[in-house]
Structure formats: C-alpha cells, structure tokens
Image (tube, rainbow over all chains, first blue to last red; front, side):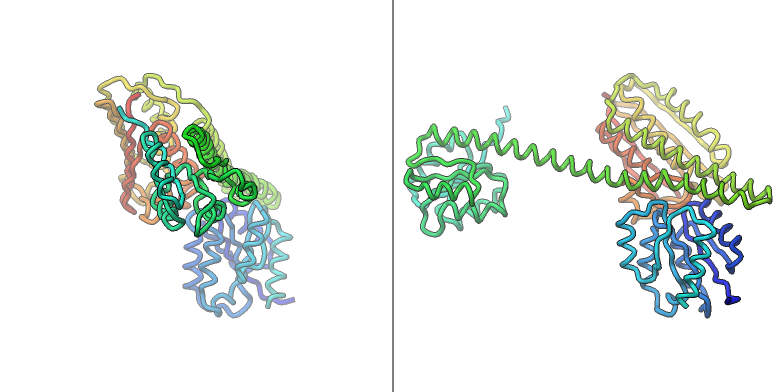
Length: 136
Length: 363
C-alpha cells in the first residue's frame, strides 16, 4: 500500500453537493486535502496558479451542468493547459443525468477519465483513488 | 385601397411570340416575368425569390422544360412548376412528373382559361406549402424546446433530490450536531431550488398555453402583492425596497402575465446583489400614462457582463452561479411580453447594477 494520499478538487455549483462530496472524501480516510469550488472558472484559476505536484495526481470531481462555465467548458479550457500541468490532475465527471450524448462527448477530452452518476458514495471515492494509483 | 400584391409568374419559352402573347393576356392580373432561355430564367429566379408559379415550354433548344425543372428543383423548391407541351410528348409528361416533379401540365396551344385555372390551383398549392413550412418551423422550435426541457427536467429536478438523498445517507455517519445543522441548511436550499424550478414550470405553462385574460389592473394591488412576496428576502438580505406608482388612467391587461414579469424581475434584483455593499437597493417604478405602461426594475447589484447580455432571455441560460436559479425566469418574462406585444430593455453595468425597462400598451 502506498502511504500517499491524493488531494481532491470538487467543482459543483450546488453547495450541498460540494458539502457531501467533501464529507465522503474525508470520511474515506484515504485522501489528502479537499477543496471545493461552486464556480468552475475559479477552480481553473486555482489550478493554473497551483505549484507543480510531484505525486500522486490530484483528483478533480467535475459536475457537468453548471451555469457560466459548464463542466465541458472547463474541460475545454483544461485541455489547453501545458502537458506538465495536465499530468498533475485526473478528472472524473459526475452528473445526476448520465445520458448517452454526455458519455460520448467525454471521449473528446483525453484528460477526463470517466463519468460517475450522482449521488457519490464511499465506494465510488475509493474506486477513484484506486484508479489514481493505477494511472500512476 | 391597398391591393394585394400581384402573384409573380415566370414563363419560359424560346419563341418570343409566345412570350409576348402570354404577357399580354395575363399582365393585368399577374406580375408576369418572361425568359427566352435557361440563363434568363435563372436570372429571374435569382432576383425574384417570391415567384410562385413557373410555366416552361418543353421543347427548347438549350434544355428541355423537364431538364430545366429538374435543374432548379433543388435550388428553388418553392415555385410551383407547370409544363407546357403538345399532345405527342407523352414521354415528356411522364418524365416531367417523375424527374421534374411538376404540379401539372398544360397542353399546347394553351387557352387562357387553362392557364388561369393552372395559376389559381398552383397558387393555392403554393400557399398551402408555405403555411405548412411555417407550421413546421414552429413545430421544430417546439421540439427543440421540448428537448432542452427534457434534458433540464432530468437534471434540475433530479439533482436537488439526489443531493438530498446523498445528504441523508451521509448523515447516518455524522454524530456532530453542528455538522448536521449545516447540512440541514443546505438541504433547505436544495428544496427551495426545486420548488422555485417547479414554480417556474408552472409559469411557463401559464404563459405558453394559457389564454390572456384581459381585465382592469390596479397597480396598487399588484405592487402590494409583490411587496408581500419579497418582504422577507429584502429583510434577510438587508436590501432597501422602494416602490413608486403613478397610474393616471385605468389599465387593461393580463394580471397573471404582469405578476410573472414583475415577480421574476424583482426576484432577480434581490438575488443578484453585491454581498459586500451596505446600501443594497431595489427600485420598482410604475407609470401608466398615455395608453402605455412603463415599469422600471432597478438594482445596484452585481450587473450582467456585456458578453452575456444577449443570452439572458434564453431558456436555461444562467449568467452566474450566485444564488439559486433555474435559468427559466427571464425566458418566461420574455415569453409573457411576447404574448402581450410588449417590449423589454436591459441596461447593465457590471458591479454597478441592472435596470430592466418594460413597456406594454394598454389594451
């Protein structure tokens, strides 16, 4: 077992969803810090300003439907970042509605790992963390 | 008296005599355009998109009538095509129907009565087609809205419910009462969100499917109701709410639409305040004068950025994440005003505030 624990960034316009995600992540006991943003643009700025992370990757939980900057708008902007920056993060999308067109659209963004259905739970979070270490 | 505009008819024939005869016979009742060859005909079609009926002779040197119709069918689908041909051209007639998709054919030499009947029938067909096209466009809009609607309903209605469900699940693992309280507060916010969304759907239905009910409106009553609705929000958010009514004459209009318009604009004015401002202010100014209602809804809140202002009336568009919103409110406002033949104008400066001006004529 690695003693390293990934940090998390939660991006969701619902404050309740941010709260729940934070709690579940913390309760999993396998995570580092958790930060949440109700505006995707603020999260993007935070990532741009963040220092280089060595290991492990930081996990981004990204809601799809958000006003101003949607999950896909965020992904679009994220893909423009330089490779070093991108490689510090691993993105999982979350949504209450998992329709086929969203699933297909995710394929256009190499930085997005996959789509999870809300509500999140402990099992999903642990699965995510496993994926971080498989991804390296 | 305004005469209805003459129907435009194009006649294509390589014999100048035929063209002249045609024009002389029908120019009184119709706007006749003539072409002696393919090129001239195409020129007319380009310059007159409102040509309704095209007659073409079958036997022409550059192209047969059928070939001509086949050629223009894709680019100019609207005009109704009629072939003029002699009895012996059975093959041409069959081709005309199969390839050129002609409406009918007139035998040569034509009689005036034949042509008149043909134009009349073709025109009826043209009008019916146009009507269908308009209806189809309306249907397409309705379908597109329904699509957006279905997508949004699954998200905007399910999301708060799933959040609440998640919170309930989570609460089983939390012992700290202050954390539970915080969560309950957020749950309340989600419930409020969902309720507002459902209220907006209700408004949408009222605006879209309901009939206008014109009655005399006393704006004192309307404003009284709005004051009552927003009193608590104003107090909680510490926003000054000033209203002014100048009603010089009786106003006839649809009270339900007025309520939807005012309620949405005022809700927004209260919602999108600058948190750090100490002189938060919302003003409602209503003037009924000279057969027109003018309502000013003014706030000194966060404002709307220039690149969003064109989109704010679109269904499900949201320009900010500040506070809860369904992206439905201003769409309903615009829709209600469309029904009332009213207009809305927005002036906004980011960080300084927004003013909506609504104008509706007295019915």
